[in-house]
Image (cartoon, rainbow, N blue to C red):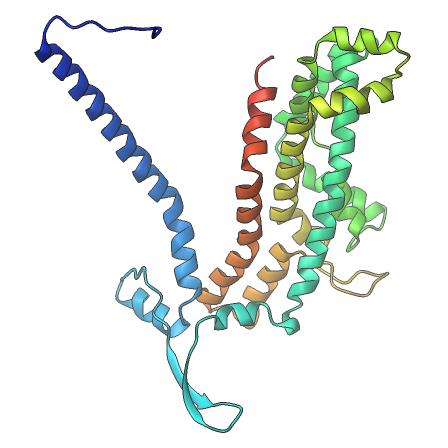
Length: 319
């Protein structure tokens, strides 16, 4: 038997109820469809614009038109056999962005190294700190945790000045250390994971102590596996944050590494230098570069979106 049964005194009342229910569902789906289009449209327009020639894009802008279909410009030239053929400039903007002379792959490799290492460092510090605040008992624990949470009220831009002075004092300009350690500790991730650890029954901790488990063994054998959805969420969000970082890399890593001899720019500030140079007026190339930066994160999020939702639902139950 259903939990809630509805009884009608007449057929007209039943039809009215069904009509209201259908109308509500149609209205809801229409709203969600429009909202989805509102979210997807900018990304779709980026894809279309990135495959347009600059001439066609400027022509549309002058006429104040928005074309949602790529209008590739055709050109004539000689092929390898010396024949005069017609070709389409489908991905010329992407070829320019990926050109080795622009150091794009160096930027990409720097970004991958910084994102992976800083994320690993962030996860380790978050796990250890969250375990300490969730399970260990020591004097001043609540006061210390309150002070740490209070630092979240300080805007991140204000920390840039002190971080830069510290990096300059330690001569960390244009090094991986400056790019990695600034993202190595996150108060929000510590708080986020602590909420998950607090939901684990304390009886498991007491039983583990009886079986001879120490703190670290209990942490890695019991708490980490149970809190894995939240930890995976932290990994994903940390990777995305490191990948999208711009202000700090642009400030501290705009030159050449003194040890390895290659540029320390990441994809964000590296492609920005490209925009300000030879292709400063080429809007379609800028959009293509933005697509190259955004696409890996978009695919990454689609693959692991279930872990993010699972981690959010698990850590948000208990305050």
